[in-house]
Image (cartoon, rainbow over the protein chains, first blue to last red):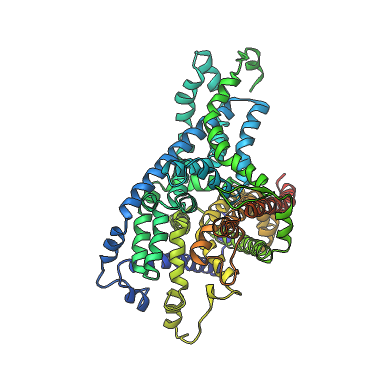
Length: 279
Length: 307
């Protein structure tokens, strides 16, 4: 702010140019997708940048008929359950970490943060083998369990970190008044942690909604259980380089996340940057 | 907190046991479906195992010994390390470059930060489809733009050549994730007191001097986060590779996570895949450790300038 007067005009000009260049780099591929979804295959190859004239809605009905509603339902179930389970389990754990003291608290938090150091692919083969033995592959329950297990570390890390900053006097007062631990969790800690919970919820929503890896491996034969990203991969096998149809699928599959991003931008940014602390 | 409260501390006895009970559901799910399979990976690294419903056989260090001469595996290690290094360096440089320009909170910068962040919320599958079209050699976006500006005879190989494929994957990775890193840097920059920068430039420091002597050292915590997170993201970039290149051409983009996936689920060598996962884990830990060492040096610099 106070440095403004040191900025020369040419500096400001160069700054605006480079900012605009990157805005174009972000926008153009996205516009190509939006326009492309409304074109024919020969149109998109002949003129990828121009607007679609006349817009063609056939691609959307094609992709909709390719089992997209079913995939939407599966994605909604898996994402909804995984987010809720992760939030409930992680907030209970965060509460325990915040209330315990000394080595007990550190041990509990350490047990979960250890999981942050392990890339998902290290465990995925054995996870698959275990789920296969338990007959949990090819089920949505199995998919929800594995999605929850792998996002618990980051959720615990963020929520416990926040809950530890709540003033201890608050708890003491409530305990003197005879509040149980459950009451503390429900009526004091959770309401006060709402900003943090909201941020983690949006973060988890994006991760679970977009995940391909686990649906790809844990639903080997049941294509009726495929989630959206898995369905898109299947679609590509069918339509190969028919990009207009693929782009219509991309647009439909992204809609919930994009709408949420526009409406709840603040929470997204908070969630995805606190997610950045992991590692 | 203060002395007087210490007197009464209701020394409220903490119900340790019941507090642990709160964590029990999470411990059960995370323990059974994440920690246990991870530990089993260590164990099965010593086995010859063709997967579920077959009998594993103890082979000791055989799997690990075979990795030494496994040229495909060694190629995957170097591809992963190269991918990580290039993405980390480029992403730190570019996101720092842009965050310096976006540090003030105006209508324009808030909008641009949101725009740059946008790709982060997309599914990697969607991102892969978008870039598959951008790079399509026959008639993709790059091809059309080159035609448009009159470069009809120039045809870059992009994902099609073993020399360039990895770098074109780097571009996708950065396009996908840089918005997040810009936000981390912006947050870090906003914590640097403006008077410090002003004082320096009044004392006649050039813009470059101010950056290297003050901004960069004070930014160390943010840099550490960006480096660590970017590193982690590149090591787990399985989905982009799966959808865009399938490791090709000629294994030029066969990152470790993709190689291990192939080893287990396509070659059916679960034991070998387990030993490779262990090596993968060791590499990730070693890289993270080295980065922390390197960045701690920067951080001690920061203390000099922030009394």
